[in-house]
Image: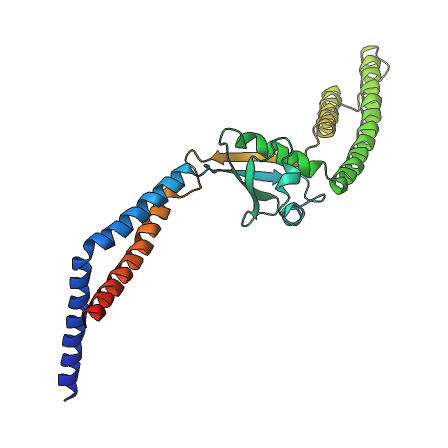
Length: 257
């Protein structure tokens, strides 16, 4: 008995589905018209909308004791108007994302209306971070510390160079009966000290907080997603068109009765 009921239910559902299909075929002009108009309008609107391009950059923080990626995310928030003052109205969206497994790197994502000018936005973003009052104060303190190290090292270098010259001169004049220090070692030490001094000078002159490691700018617009919007429009309008066809058929039959 149950099997007969199940078979009857399946048969009934097939009949209902077939009736729906006949209505769709009968009202195919209405269905296809609604879908066609919706797709065309969606395509036209999407092509007329301003194009938005996306650029991404991996940035590295050289001094995480001053600022770290999480702090940058908290500071930036949604302040794109305050950051990109050199190109007002260019940037549509700014997003900062942490790089997994890294404490000193983060990804900067910029959506802008001009693909060619996105490249200029990354240095502008870095400049904004480096000129924050809290960052500038810490950078000033770090530079003063480096300056003190450089001054101390310069004194040591001068003293060592003078000692080396006098020592070699004394050897040549025969003042020492036995040489206790190798002149080559003194010269090598002088070279090492000069390298340390040069490194400190470079660090002081080029004290950058953030460096831009990699950049990638999409050639195709990120927005609007034309094909996706057209497909969604076709699906939604198709459902709407079928519903309209069924309601139209129901109204027609109701008038007949």
